[in-house]
Length: 239
Ligand SMILES: Cc1cc2nc3c(=O)[nH]c(=O)nc-3n(C[C@H](O)[C@H](O)[C@H](O)COP(=O)(O)O)c2cc1C
Image (tube, rainbow, N blue to C red; front, top):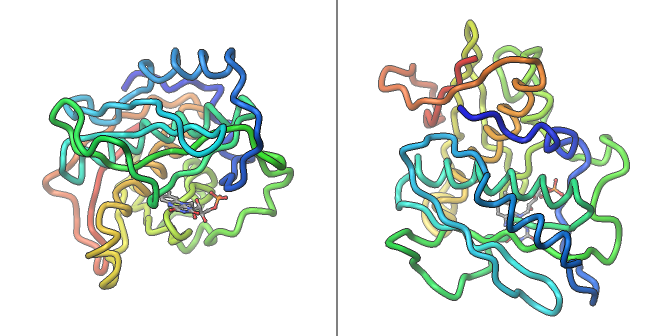
C-alpha cells in the first residue's frame, strides 16, 4: 500500500466530533490544502472505486460527500479514505463530523452510490481534545485478542456511529484480521452500511499506527479467514 501521510497520525489522539460551527468560513488556504489532499488520499483496496465532492452545508460549514460502489468492501475502502480527510482537517485546526444524517445533493456520482458526508468548518469551541482521557472508549482487551499489538491504541480511539465501536482485531503473526460485530435490528435495517464506515475508519487508524512503527502494512480480503461468532470478517492487514 502507498504510505499514508504520517502527519495524520498525531491527530488520532486529539481529534473529536464537532457539532457546533461558527460564522467564519474555512480560510481559503485551509480549503485549498484540503482540495489538494483529497486526490492523494490512499485507498485501502486499490481495485475499489470512490469519489469525494466538496459542497456547502449549513451556514459557513461545508461537507465532503463520499461515494463508492454499493458493496461492503467498497464502503470500507471509502471510509478508510474519508478518515484520512477527517484527520487532515483536525490536524489543520478545522472541526469535522462524520454525519449519517446529512444527505448529498446527488444520490449517485459517476455510477457510484452515495455513502456518507463528512461535515467540516470552523468550530465554535476547540475542534480537538486537550487530553486522551476525554475519549469514551472500550478497553484494549475488549477489542483484540492481543491488546499489546501496536495498532490497538490507535484503533480504540477511532470514531464510530453512535460510538458503537463494533470492531474486533484478531492478531496473528504480522497480520490482523478485522471483524465487525453483528448488529441488532436497527443496524441491519435503517443503519445498514454504517458498520462498514466504522470498520474503514478503524483500519485507517491501524495502518497509521503500524506505519509509525516503521512497518509496511498491506490489505486484502481473505477467502479463508476464520469465523468469529457474532462477528463478520471484513479485511486483513499484513505487515
Ligand atoms: C459512520 C459515522 C456516522 C456518524 N453519524 C453521526 C450523526 O449522524 N450525528 C452525530 O451527531 N454524530 C455522528 N457520528 C459521530 C459519532 O457519534 C462519534 O464519532 C462518536 O460518538 C465518538 O465521538 P468522537 O468522534 O468525538 O470521538 C458518526 C460517526 C461515524 C463514524
